[in-house]
Amino acid sequence: MHELITSQASRNNKRRSFFMSAIQELIAQLNQTTEAEAREKLSGQIISLIRSQDTVWAAFCPATKHYFIAKDEKQLTAYLFSEQEYYQAFADSMRKKHIILDAAENQQEQRLFLFAELYRCGVTQVVVDNDQNHASVPLSQLVAIPDYSTLPLVQRPVLNPAVTGKIICFMQDIQFRRADGNAELEVFQEIYHSPFLMPIIPKTDTTPEQPGIYHLPDGQQFLMIFTDLLSLKKLNPEEYRQARIVRFGDFQKFLQENAEIPGIIINPGSGAPMLLDRQLLEIAEKFATGAVDQIEVRSLNEDKGKTIVTKPEVWPQDLVNQMTVVLENETSVKTAYLRAIRRDEDIRPHYLIVIDWEPETAKETKQGVQRRISEASLPYARGLELEFISYHHEIGKEWAGSSEPFYQKKQDIPESTEISGKSEKKKGLFGFFRK
Image (spheres, rainbow, N blue to C red):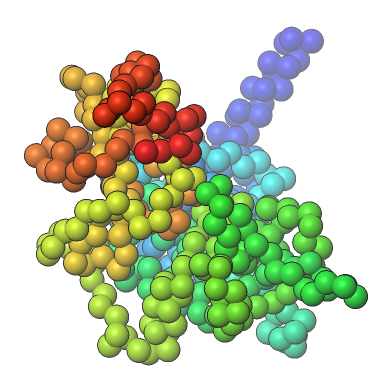
């Protein structure tokens, strides 16, 4: 019996190796061929093998819990690999750029679901075996793209691949510190022109219709909307049995009628939710309607101009809770402070985390801690970028200012202290009780 299993595994490995070698051979031939008819034939064979190969590996971004998407000549691009070592070479090269990825293994029977998810997330192009002999394949050649143009508007399903993809890309860029104001405004424009789904509790004889409200851990409430039905189902709000199609004007009207709601949250429950307050919605409307003279657009990478560091205008308790959970498992951090930093070129501020490290903490250890904080905190950062600086940097102590640390290693916290005859208040498990 053991010999039979071993023999079967050997045959499977040989078959898989054949397919992988075949893809690489075909890609190499394609890259060396200029004649149009021959290239079309080779491309067809590559596409057939991508569809039928036993296993492929897709680049996956754990920070957003979506497949990794990059912009390649304005196309949203996903990356597939016919051999795991090809993925690993790609992941290693991206790690040098401080972009951390995982490999998502996809079996042949799940291939169409993979392509459908890539379409939902705005992908228009797939690169196969990047950094090796590689090929770029339009997603439309791998899977039939649905066409609802013949249906009346009211009968068309809400599918927003363009806005979903741009949101995911933008949240990726925030996580990896590559976002800029221009990318943000691109997202705003898509949001302004796209339809969304808003879950509702239908009205009854005694109660009016109630829209979906998302409750943050710090008590704030936001109107929740979704780019498509699958994103809505991921949250699975059982109390909302129906959904309504809404547009930008509907958001604005709701916020005008409900002053206590500060904004909207797009795709809560996903790995990359996006939160927009009233000010950002106003910027989105101005940009999308052509009032660009009222908006100054600069790259966030232009490190020039005045820098202002203050306490966050609204204390993000949910974000602090997530960072605290991470830091409680890190022995290299003594204390950590949360500030808001804004430069002249920023559309909105970033969160600044000032960390006081234990002496002689290695650079690699610091980078690992910062990465783990970022990965855990992205869904709670409300679309803002996280920046890190050491407390002992030449300006780190100055930027921490006189603020209290939101985290302090337990052994560094005295049991009790007396200040002017009064006991200092303890912070509690998650920092709910502060001075």
